[in-house]
Amino acid sequence: MKKPGEVFADSSLYDPGIEAIVPRYDELHDAILNSPPQDRTEEIRVLELGAGTGELTAKLLTRFPESTVLAVDHSEGMLAEAERKLETFGDRADIVQGTFPDDYPTASDEFDLVITSLAVHHLPSAEKRTLFDSLADALVPGGWFVNGDVIRFDASHLETVSSAMIANWVRSKGWEEEEFMNRWQASDEFDDPDALTDQLLWLREVGFESVTSVWQYYNFAVYGARKPA
Image (cartoon, rainbow, N blue to C red; front, side, top):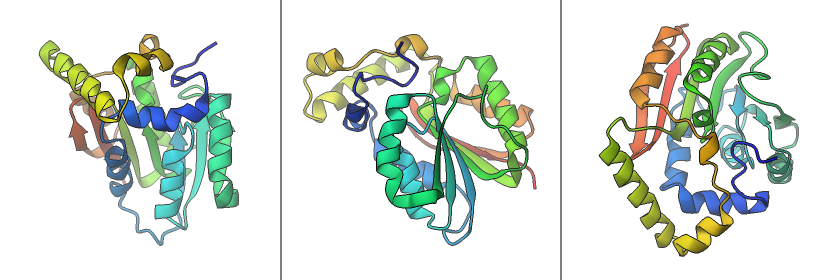
């Protein structure tokens, strides 16, 4: 049975596929990794939810060479790719199978940083709020949560503009749109994006501060918040 995020039957196709469907994918990752206040020489404990094939995980472990990451995903295929990709980092990467917010996070005051990308939008609104509340508990005082994700526009014409932009992006990557969509296992049934303004409000409501939007390109955004010190 296909799960949220399993948009290709063959997980090895995910990395090139996601770069063809998500505009400025590397820029989105850079915005996530540039947002934490920690110095690159600091020893930080990171939780990554929806780690997928470990692409963002590898970038974080490289950029923060003293960091360790608990990388969580529910897909066996994705985790197999992540294990291969992250093998070079040894025990700095702990890869586990699980879901969120049901399985993770599990402890209080455990992580300096929580990151996630292109995953939280699979949760209904109520579960997003539950997740944000649990993350506020899981972070150490002063810790940060940073998410790069799909958002929803309340204005229908902007949703139409965003869809056209993505179609153009797919073509710019050398894919014929029909060929690409034939290989892409549509995951719309799992998608439930919310407006960025709503998510920022929910973060404030569960006790986060310094809630901010960091980066946005049409309906892709990076936002973050800090647990009070």
